[in-house]
Length: 345
Image 1: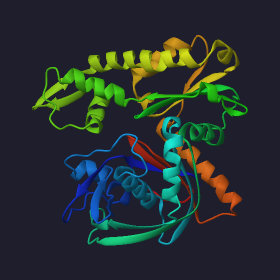
Image 2: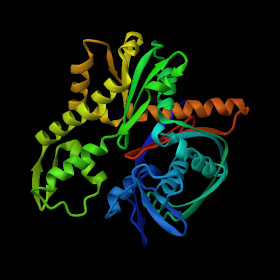
Image 3: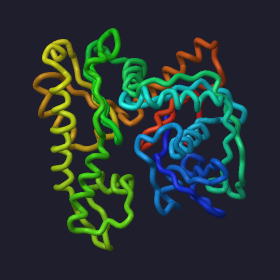
Image 4: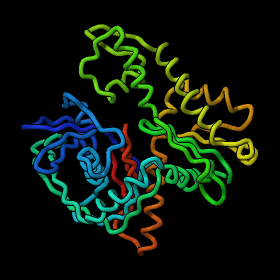
């Protein structure tokens, strides 16, 4: 059984004894790393003062390592668990980060200390041991292709795949032989829209210490409370999204995907969190629906995680199986985990 769940990719250092804020681990993650405690995900949003996450952090940086261990903890169903694991990065950082990620996973055994008092009455400090028996680091867009083919059983053999992420947008043509390397390109993701919204809002308002991730939540709603006043910026947001689509998506496709490519393409598949914006969907429809069918993938945020899972399943079978199979999409906005174990949150 394939089981997918996740948490917001936010963290913050934490001190003292905390109250129960949830009835499950996924919404109450507090883990210890290098002798310091960190709130992660929903727990960070509930109890933190400055929830944050470095965008496109390297596997050597604290942000990445804390979130990585939090994902392993969330994926675990028992102590002393052995897993096959797959995870990765956008093409723009894959070559640079892959050796660092492999070095991290090669540590093999992870002893994770966490605080169960945030989700259990009379909870306390607990530890769990997880062994990574087999792993593979693959590009995120490759994971999305695997997810489409294995989880959604798509029929098309030639298609254009576009992943609209928070930190990175990736575009590439898929053929029966895999991704066409000539057509693969990475550009800044939705975070560029968040930064543009900040520039506009700061013209008339004091933003305080609001982080990009906090502003992202306001950007989705189209409004924010600043100095105890509701500021509606829906119209400005929609203008930013349309300009972003033109400059970073449409123009990029024109520059890298030729008419010869479009002659072979049967459909355009679009995944990633950027699908949530109706303006982005409308831009795609207006530009491409008269040329090719456009499909917005169901559950677009979790497609990469599912692809990583199926890749981990492949290497697990090659190694004659282990206790659990895990795919982790450690995203800049949210982290998603897919396993074959019945871990319900």
